[in-house]
Length: 166
Image 1: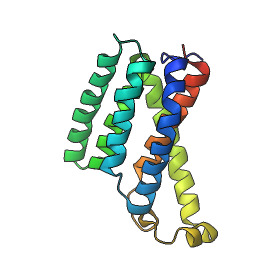
Image 2: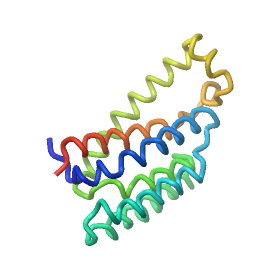
Image 3: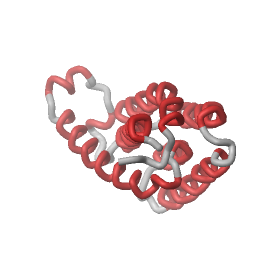
Image 4: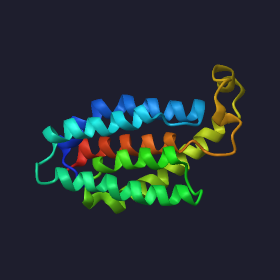
């Protein structure tokens, strides 16, 4: 399997993205909120590292991904389908995805949402894990912390891109 994203770009992005993705996932599970500073940090990583990692002709098109996903996300949020934080975070993730990988990314997202949901629910019912994280709001909330799945999807995509990218 070869991804449309370049291996070099994914390798550049990964070390900066991983800590932000972990922060966003943890925050969403603990507080049921993705901090705006995490979203802005991810966007800034793309703005700066993208100038080094991507061909200059591709860079503005990747920024357009953010605009499109933000628009779709806000529509979905307005109808209550997703949270506003999830919409903003998905938009910040969008520029990292090459256009040629959009449909493949949809499959990754679907699989990782299912895996993250099952994992979250298993840990939610684990007394030992709940003891370690008693203050996490996601244990008692009926909503699923999508930041957990979105972070996992981005990191998985970049790891695959670093390994199997064009």
